Structure formats: structure tokens, C-alpha cells
Length: 271
Length: 291
Image (cartoon, chains in turn purple, green):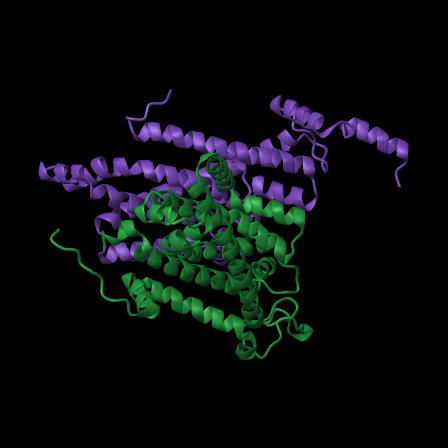
């Protein structure tokens, strides 16, 4: 048992003897100046710990978003222009299946197929110097998240395209003789991009949360592994920092979404 | 328009349901798979001779055989038995949390839409914050802090599923409250509760139920994800996420232990999505006219 004096001393050192509002103001003050306290387990600054793994999470999410958009947008457009034909049904059912994957199930299946059975990729994705090694380490984790992302983007693109394709200006464009591929690309897809960006922006936040599952399966560092470790060890200062960083990420993704609006639609002016 | 086309006389709820399901045939596939899983889960003892908790040290990690269809795990327990008993946990937690989210969420949406003003603004702000924050992380933190018991897991999943129900109930409430029939109700002196429950809720119930089937898929996925991370119902009770977690530890030599429950989760979620997606096509008035 700790003595009464050492308890008092510790309370004083941690500031626990002051009122809650005073403690909170103190926390906000130092948090704003970049001091998020030290981890209760490792003793290292929370900011350092988070900044070490943050690039891994950003890399994983960014690559899977790119994969998802590269596969999802063309598939969604293809399904929309072939509405109610065989292609449309196939794409719809396939994307619904893709959307049904829990992130860890897609990860386990990819790991089993390509890392354990075929041995194309390493089982543990660790990064080292060369581009080849980076490619090997990112491929499976990014695919497992990208698959779900692609399924989602396909569905959103399809419904946004269907809406736009029934607009009057699309008919006008066709009537004045614009070639169909150009109508689809320039008149329809360009306008369908706005709703796509909105929904994908919201989904990106969810995916950043889901990357915890991918990180566990591929034993990859990242925010998810950090928060699970902090929860297991009751590292409260770290958890506090993690909550702040997840909130900041959500705000940041929202900001990116707004910027993307401006890029996709010249009518939106960024001040 | 020359004259309004009157719909045929209603021939009972069953016919109405069949008509809704026929709009998109895939909902039938979803319904059949889902019912099969529910029947197997409820009558689990009839579908296996094995006890999901019975350990057999002589049969650790044995592969699929006639006696053990999907083999046994590291304690010699029958995988098929654990799978179908585990379905009970997944379905029970999923249904409980979705029903709670549905009740709480649509109440919030109804009240916010009906009363408007500051209450509406505050409630919708709270919903937006809940919606924007990564839901798995929120569930993770809640379960880790409160402890991984069934009520806490249900609470965490329900909380993260409330916002979509609040949103889907709010918008039509705002539109409906301006309608003449609602004004008539008011001038007859009906209470707010009576108007909301008897005259507005039935108009939006279908959409809420469809949303429920889609979010049930999400709830089952979240429960499995939490169990996979290690925050599920405590062992030895079988859960699908927990089975994948322990199967994953033996993935190099006994891959089926992780693959079988993975496919089970995938099939159930896919079935729910097929069902919900098909029903949404039937219920959504915007899509109805296009089809």
C-alpha cells in the first residue's frame, strides 16, 4: 500500500487535487500547444506514439480509397448505362456481396489465399526500403479494405449516374448529336461526382475505424493496433489522445471532401 | 390525367408482402437463406449430435471427417456445433441491438421532426457527431470501458446504429405534419402522441423496417468484429467472431477453423443485404416510379 504522503504527492504532481474544470482547462491548454501528455504505459509522449503509426494508417486508407475508386467508378458507370440488363444485375449482386464482407473476413481470406497458399506475398506486412518491398507489404491489406470500398463506390456511382442520366440536359446533349461516351463522361459523370464524393467522404471515416481489423490480421502497425493496445492496458492518457486524433481525422476528411467539391464542380468556390 | 387509377382491393397482409417481395426477386433469396439460418440456430440441438462446449483431447485440430463435418478446434470441440450455436449469439445480439436502435432512433426522429426548433437542432447535431465518428472505434471503446458483457455489447452496437433511424424518421415527419389530415387531427383535439403514433408512424414504418434489415447486417458485422478483436462474449460460449479469432491463430495448419465461420458471417450478411436492398426498391417511392 502507498503511504498517504506519497499519494498526496502524486495527486499534486498529476494535478488531481484541483477542481475538474481547472483540470480540463489545463488539458485543453496543453493539448492545443501540442502537449498531449505521456503514455501511462511506455512513458513516451502520446503525440510521438501517435505520429509514429499515423503514416501507416493514412497510407493504408489512401491506397484502398484509390483502389476502390479505380474499380468502383467505372463499374458503377457501366452498370448504370446498362440499366436492368444482365451486366447491371451482375454488378449489383457482386457489389452487394463485396459490401457484405466484414473487413477481417476479407483480410483473412486474402491472407490465406495469396500469402499462405500461393506465397506471393509475405504473411506479415512490414515495410522496408525498396519499392518492391513496399508494394508487397501494402497490396494485401489495401486490397482487403479496397474491395469493400470498391463495392460501396460502385453502388453509390450507379445510383448517382441513374439520377443524372434521366436529366433533361443529358437528353439535350444526345439530341444535339454529342457522342454517347462523351455524354456519359462529361455531362453525366461530372455531375454525378458530387453525390459520390459526399457519400464516400462519410464512408472514409468508417473505413479508418475498420482498418483496425486489417491491421490485426496483417500484423501491421497503425492507429487501430495502438488503440487496442491502449484499451487492453488501460492507458488512459493514450486513449484520450486517440479520441482527439480520430476526431481530427473526421474533421480533416470533411475538409478534404469540401476541397474535392471545388475540384469536381466549378460552381463551388472555395474561399 | 383523366382519372385516378384505384388500386385493387387489399387482399390481406400476406398478399401485400408477396407483392413487395416480387418487386425485386433477390429479396426472396435473402429471405430464404435468412429463415434457414434462423431455423438452424433456434433448433440447433436437432442439427448436431455434438455439444459445442465438449472438449476432446484425443481429437484436437482434426480435419473434416464424417463424424466432424467441419473438423474440430484446438480443444477438440466440434466446429459445426460451435458454428450453429454461435449463430444464436450473433442473431440475438444483432436483433436486440437493432430493435433498440430502431425504437430509440425513430422516436428521436419523430419527436425532432414534430417539435422542430431547438430540440430538433440539438438532437440532429448529436446524431451527426455519432454518425461521423468511426463507429467501430466508438463501439470498441464503450465495450472495453464497460466490460465485454452481453448487455454492454448490445448497448454499444445500438448506440452506433441510432443516427440512421433518427434521420429516416425525421424527414417524412416534417413533410407529413403540414398535411391537411394532420391538421384535421389537431383541430379534433387529438394529443400529439396519438397523432404521431396512429397517424404518422404507419406512414413511415415500412421504410424504418427496411432500414432495420440493412442495419441488422451491420450489427451482426460489428458484433463479429468486436469478438474478433477480443471484446466479444467471453469464451467458452461460441461466437463467430471469436471462432475466427482463435481459428486465425492456427491458420497455418488448420485453415478451415477460420474459413468456416468467415463464410457463415459472409452468407448471413449477404442474405440480409439482399433482403434489405430488394425491399428498399419496393418501398422507396423515388425508385418505385422509375422501375
